[in-house]
Length: 184
Image 1 (cartoon, rainbow, N blue to C red):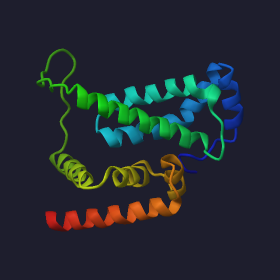
Image 2 (cartoon, helix red, strand yellow):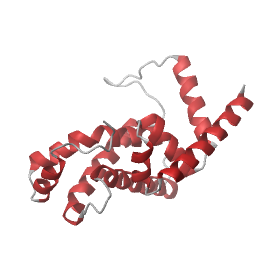
Image 3 (tube, helix red, strand yellow):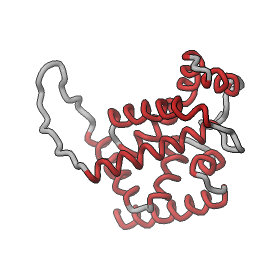
């Protein structure tokens, strides 16, 4: 079952959530929150910001639910579009108001956790490799291989045809292969 595959009770949850039923809202959250979070985390690389934006997605869902109409777009794809919009808004705010990184301190109960050097190297290599892609290619690669969506789910989430997603994926993988070949 893919990330955008509706739960058998989804239509009922949506109808009840429109009435303000907290249990139905919680059910929708439980069904989709992990995929939304993973998508945002892989795009941001920051767990705290991904958590904040995931919460924003579901607040926006509650706000816009009365206006949601299926029209061939599954509910999950609608949520991923909200997530993408929140991500773009976040990047725009960051661009307008860059924040300075705070120096690491070891005060109180919060101590930096040790991360193995090879995990850092692999993560940095993936991050650098993804930067050579166009934003749309990066989105396809993130949704397909890091979040785990099918081609059809990516197409619905991005508002593109499956053929367009396949083409973006093919070009992205070719670009990544050339980049990694040069990096050797």
